[in-house]
Amino acid sequence: MTQPVLDVSNLSMRFGGLAAIDNLSFTARGDHITAIIGPNGAGKTTVFNCLTGFYRPTGGSVRVTHDNGKQFQLERMAGFEIARKARVLRTFQNIRLFAGMTALENLLVAQHTELMRASWYSVAGLLGLKPYEKATRTAMERARYWLDRVGLTAQANNPAGSLSYGLQRKLEIARAMCANPVFLCLDEPAAGLNPREDQELVEILLELKREHNIAIILIEHDMGVVMHISDHIVVLDHGACIADGTPAEIRANEKVIKAYLGQDDSEEDG
Amino acid sequence: MEFLSRACAGGAGIDYFLQQLVNGVTLGAIYGLIAIGYTMVYGIIGMINFAHGDIYMIGAFISLVGFLLMSALGITSVPIAIAGVLLFAMIFTAVYGWTVERVAYRPLRGAPRLAPLISAIGVSIVLQNYVQLAQGARVKPLQPMVQGGFTFSPGGEFHVTISILQIMIVLLTLSLMAGFTYLIQKTPLGRAQRATEQDRTMAALLGVDVDRTISATFVIGASLAAVAGLMVTLYYGVIDFYLGFVAGIKAFTAAVLGGIGSLPGAMLGGLLIGLIEAFWSGYCSIAYKDVAVFGVLVLVLIFRPTGLLGRPEVEKV
Image 1 (tube, each protein chain N blue to C red):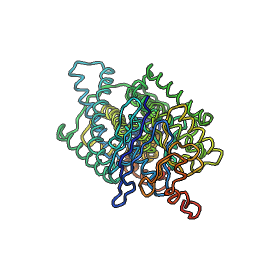
Image 2 (cartoon, rainbow over the protein chains, first blue to last red):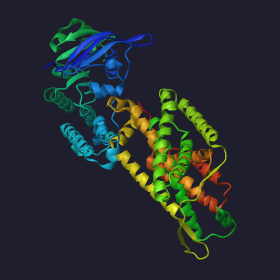
Image 3 (spheres, chains in turn green, yellow):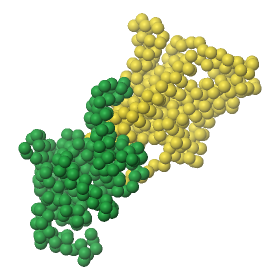
Image 4 (cartoon, rainbow over the protein chains, first blue to last red):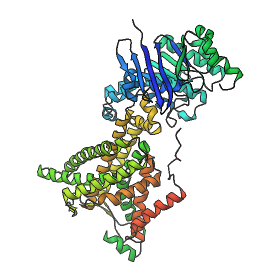
């Protein structure tokens, strides 16, 4: 069986004269957790924005191959199609939950496509027909499962905005999971978490990879987390890839130490 | 209407008060239905759809055409005719609402806020002139179809009349609002609308087709306005191409009074505007009823700009 693959080739993103990403190529395998690291301003989030249709890249291609062989050129797809068809989902560095909706509703929005189809654009929903009820039940079960998995069952009906920071982070991951992703892009999932929450996050991510066959790509500054869970690391600096390899290789890479790891302590530029 | 001016001269007891209450609630139901369209569109794309009043006028004209069609088809049963026209008007007005969004607003999705606003005013002018050209500038009458009512005289000399039509208007409005609230709160479409309202980009990144969701908002708003148009056609018996202007602005006032963006607010605001108008006409001056309504708008904007049920706008990151 082939695994899904994300293939980024010659990706460029320019804002006027500034090249935020310059001819970047890397691949991410479906059975791996891939980390994208690099100093601030290296273009990591821009890569994510190009992957998920938030930005339209100025050059290059981003191709996702599902394990059934279907291919999707993400740079040509509208934002909602990337989630719906290519099934690439993401979270944001600054949390973007629907703060006024309950935790449960947030998870149901992520299952909009199936529910909408089953409800025949709400007609069946208003009439309370069978297929819609079945789809609702499935959606609720899935939402309940993920609420339970991230420890939010008790707060299911609380507005998402009222949850604690750590829980909001987890709810964001749960919401992305409800949309049934093949690739899950996490932008700094551990930012602002305490060590215990960090540990819980690592467990959740490893479980996603192991039990749900989700390919994860993450941006993370917490090197403890990155080195612990990644199978593959891509290091960016000034929009270009300066190293690509296993954690052990990256740790030993001269360029990386120079550009990033080594300077972290001496210069407080994070 | 003539008893209104009569009361201004004469005294007014409890029965007179009750009569104004009945009239105000009926009027408020109509305003509330239109106000929902304003508030929903504002909620989801942050623009005031100034053409919405004219969509309501279109709804009234389509209803009139519908009634003529019904009589041409030989349908004489009034309930069946009204139900048929209701469906007919909702569907066709919804098509207008959808088209307006598609043609005049969607191309301006990324534009500064002022652009769709001006586009909306343009659409309003286009719709008015289109109806004026197609239907003529004169008022169109419709024979009273629903007659009869209940009369009480709790206070003696003055009678309180609740017509069957008024009861029908209020009941229809209540059931539509209940169905609509259910749609927004419980169905996938409603959830998608609320999600789009809060964070359009994030909704799209989760697979929600944002453009289609926004279209659905316009379709729903227009079909509710069509119901209001139908009711006003039955209630007053005359319509003209300019009908949507004042009613639209009053419904907008209702939406602002209730808190623009808030659905219960629009319903409450509609009711209050209807009551203010009826009581002002009844106790003060019928000529100045519009001044009273728009005076309320001024007061709300000064003292409670977020409206009765609205929340302050949160700046999005």
